[in-house]
Image 1 (cartoon, rainbow over the protein chains, first blue to last red):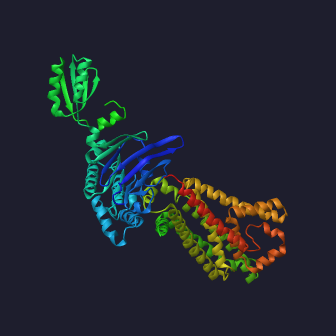
Image 2 (image 1 turned 180 degrees about the vertical axis):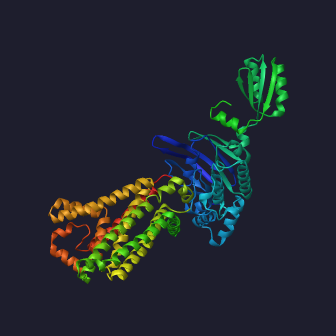
Image 3 (image 1 turned 120 degrees about the horizontal axis):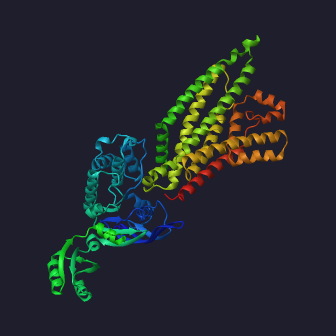
Length: 302
Length: 286
């Protein structure tokens, strides 16, 4: 099923005894999307990934990956996965790990050499191909894990916290790799708690908290324009109601916060406040970052 | 087919780790020392003034060989336990299984592959070490065990039994837990076998039943007894038979080989435990 979405879940849930790790995940990720799955630690992100890969069975709900049921062998052939916490066999060399995964993924043996060389080049480990994994740093292991996930040009690549062990250069490299995957039409499912990373590469984002998706959409939809903070006095409730045509209004005491406003309309807004009899002391327009939105959704103060 | 990939990987791991190298070096040292010991048997008669007879040499050599092979089977069983008990659990702990089992490989293939790799290691080590030891004894004192192939079969069977049990434990418990449990159970089965023999001597039905039950629940000792039998020359068995029931209490003497039905039971036991290991790991949440 070429036209089936890359991932589709309906009320997918996982409970461990009385603990709910994932409570009813419903989402659809179209082919070719770079999808960011965001949430604080313990929100259920890794559990969701393990359910999608058939590593753990769901307690309820259903899911399809590349149009097939969870754990389908043919579908798994076309999925690359970088786990969050893992180590490869310390006694194997990088090349041997890549060859092992070529074999497990059912890649044609004639293509192994090229696949391994390409993977090593992409992750910048070409000169360490014959090095034992036991001598690799955590960052190098993570790079290798990314290389393993890219073997055989999969249709879907699932990356669970791919940059957690990487330095800024490594993080930049990973972003470039993800962008390149996107250009090739590969669907990328990026699990992360690093908001800036997600903001820089993802087309669409879901924010998950305590096992539930609390927001989902494109970055534009999610961020919904800019925010302006205005310190003003002399505005009564009727005046405030009149201002709400500019955007979502929050009265934070001394400050008024208007969300979802186009910055082009800020002078118009100030003029309107003055016309309504208000006195303006300060105007602070700002672009709402994913972090602001994220913290707001999770109920944390900015 | 992917089971063979996992088996190859398991074998490769054991061969590359230092454990195997240490085991190999120690085995060579032990074989050298025991061969020297065997070569001294013909000189035992010098002290008493008349040369030792061929029958005496065979009797002493067979008893010594049984003791040496007991140590060998002990080392083999221990090594099998220590290789098998972390085989799956350590890969689960390190997250290796996350990366591997997200590939199109079933848990059945993974567990059976692990088992095949471990069995191959046992075969390589047991066949080469036992064969070298027996050939050297033959050269040193001219004694050869009456049933060497059966001996290998029983000793390897014993190792595969304890290995399969350890692999089952490895699907659920950390390597240390599985290793210690495996060894304790192996020791209990050995003791159970002796208790059963004592029961036979004193005609005590309860003790005999304990022995039989332990042989069925964990067939390591039952197979070890088959191994002992295959090392005994006919003259020894004849002499022990003449001595009556008292000989039965000796854990290093066995009058009869295990019946074929018991061997069949051991095979069923191994397949059953392996199936249980697959079932247990299939239900394991990673």
